[in-house]
Amino acid sequence: MVSTVRASSFAVHRFVDIDSTNDWLLAAARGGALDRTAAVADFQRRGRGRLDRRWEAPPGTALLCSVLLRVPLAVEDRHLASVAVSLSAIEALHAVAPCAVGLKWPNDLVVEDQKLGGVLAETEGTEDADGRVALVVGLGLNLSTTGPSDAGGTSLLDATGTMPDRDQLLDAYLDVLSVRADELCSATGRAALLSAYREHLVTLGRAVRVTLHDTSIEGIATAITDHGHLVVTTADASHVIAAGDVVHVRAPHL
Ligand code: BTN
Image 1 (tube, helix red, strand yellow):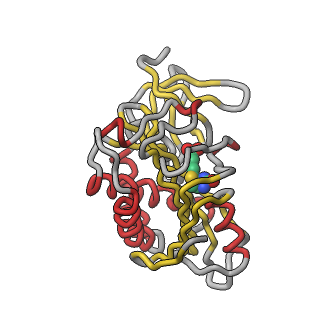
Image 2 (cartoon, rainbow, N blue to C red):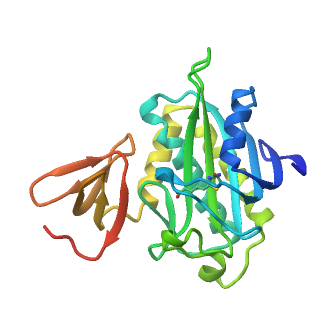
């Protein structure tokens, strides 16, 4: 670790290289680390993505940041921690590196359907005596790299023509997240997060193909449930998708 500073409501631990900022914070959470601890790295040796994928970026080419949130969230509301992170990243981008960024379900940041960033949320342990659960939520945002080769990605450099200042982006992100994380703790805050999530989800209304374990579904993404599940309507049914890979396609086969 090179330094620890306080930014916004977060205590930020900075690393030149690390296995994974999520792994470091999961271990820190087991050791009693406080709510609003953050870990940022220039490089991850074993960065992890959703669905057991790797998340790789050359040193200094991405914003790699995980946060520990200890929040009173029921199991069905825990997806909102990822929503708080993805919305905070979008709002920080609007302030620091404006581009037409939206969300692909569940929480991929995309520009013109190309992946700019992703979010990985993990739970550590069970609820504490106050009903709070420890959630570690990692954000990987491509600054000059286009991300893992299989992700069909883009970078902020490509999207805006300028290499953004990573620390300025990090500060803006943690400032917004300080507010968005508070929203996780009240019913009105959670409703605000859901509403903003639906507004930013470019998947809604689109033709999609969802790959599940051994099958795939093509239809229109018609809704998001309050629990963050995607509703895909096909010619004969509505399917509620809790987890899976979604591709935006041009036309549905209804
Ligand atoms: C995805 O698959 O879209 C999610 C990618 C999340 C990557 C970030 S980078 C910071 C944090 N540490 C990790 O090992 N993964 C997350």
